[in-house]
Image (cartoon, rainbow over all chains, first blue to last red):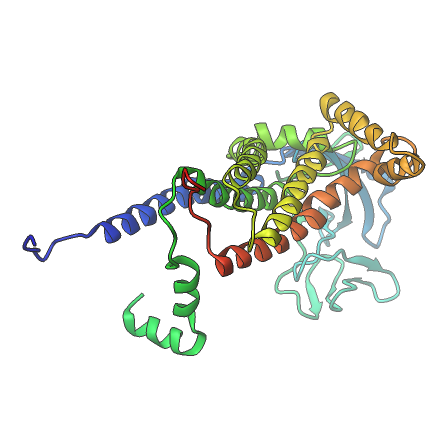
Length: 162
Length: 219
């Protein structure tokens, strides 16, 4: 019988090791690309940042926020999808246009202007915002988001992010 | 894992007995043809894994099926790899399962006491072919559509009940979105569940009865 050193590896251990290494390699070859496969849509831009016409200045109501709906095409997956959004336009004390997103800053439900309460009401968790989007009560952590706006002629434009 | 962790686990689960029974069992001296069953099992597991990931993007409707696969192939990172493995794995699996059956047949390994193993094996072959047939429609391209038109028409030639069976298979008189929908359901739920359930029985029987040795010249 040959003398076995401390580093001796028997056939059984060798085969087990080879099987283990090959299994790990195969798992990596399939497993690592799967990560990229799963996160792929998160890394794709839906496109469509830019100025969007909202509506005419003349449609503004004098003393309360006026809802304007606008839509833009977004590339989602293999399709161009028309996404409808609403923005509320009002004027602050100095007469500047304030364009508010209707997405609640708490957990992104859609807020709605309630003339009776003179407030934006979020139906999900009773968040209340005033006419300029400041939090009155409820869980929202910050005021409603303001969209960048400009006026060309009689038309109001808003800038939407990608 | 350290021996202490393994001992702790083994004392509470009996893992070592399972490991010894499944992997350290005595086998006769055999040849490479005996690896086809393991190869089939490996391919089945690969099909399950890649199939699960494909369903995350695939949409089983006539409007979106083709486009969603184009998206997987061209826009999703490594989508070509996941679908490629599923596509070629399917073909290879039918091949290995069939060769596995031939090996068992020519070595007479289906005889006593392994008749039930053989019967479950036949069920597994049919399920594999069924998975191949239902999966073939899912790309919803010309080849898929007409292959399924022909395949379901074959069922229509069965005497008396053929017409009815064909309508059941198609979900109506003609190939439609209902056909695609039910083939998808069969392909990702019904057939895989039956396949892996039957594989469990098949493997239990293989381990219980042990594998047969290569027949000798004088047998």
